[in-house]
Amino acid sequence: MNEYEPNPKLENLVKRPPKDYSKIFIILGVVIGILIFIILIMALSGKKVTVKEVSKKQSLDEVTLELEDFIEVNGLDALDAYTLDGVTRVAIDNICEGVYNCHEISGEAVSQYIMKTFDKEVTFSNINCEVNDGVIYTYDSVNNKFVFTGEHPHERLQTSPIYTKVYSINRKDDKITLVLNKLYYDPARSDFITTDPRGINQIFNANDYMHTTDNGEDIDLTKLKAVYENNYDRYKNRGTRYKYTFVKKGIHYVLEKYEVISEEE
Image (cartoon, rainbow, N blue to C red; front, side, top):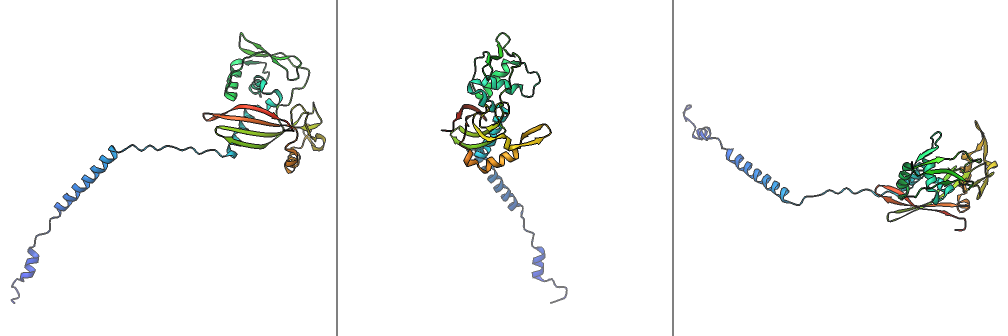
């Protein structure tokens, strides 16, 4: 073969036209477009999926903390002194907490407290002192307010315990039953630490738990709590306990029932 004679095989390679891929790309684009269209049609025509948020049910430990806080914030320990018939006095004490010279209290504020805390309405009247020595708050129906009648010649009942411990808590449907042990100390009424604010049901001799503070002699709560906790099975059914039945209204609890449980029960 001449050096310059063309090679047929090489010539064929050189002259072969390049493959046209444009048709393939067009077909693929059409197919992808159709698939996207079908998916959109299915999504729009299908049933709407609703994501429902499921709220976590509170554990009893969480409920206990919430209800103990509810009792403290709303001053419900005062029921131990005034009973459930004395919710108006409980309301006044709570409203006047930390208020200097709280001698006139709005009836509207009392109503709001009672509705928020007990979910009920109360007919207002004069309020007798807790030791039955006369009226302590006069109700002025014209101006819808309670007016303090003046200082009474005695110490008021202690309406806050020095220590509280949960005896039991139970849940049934939307109701929670909480039973509390409480320790009170009122030196004006008793030399003993008791389970009630009137100093009747004695548990400990207060003199055994005294220590010196900047304000004089007072109960050593660290020592008292240690003895009480370490011997709780021995003391938990002595004296009185306090039973609260709460019901949930929306996202909040209200107190539906309050009971004092005697030692025999």
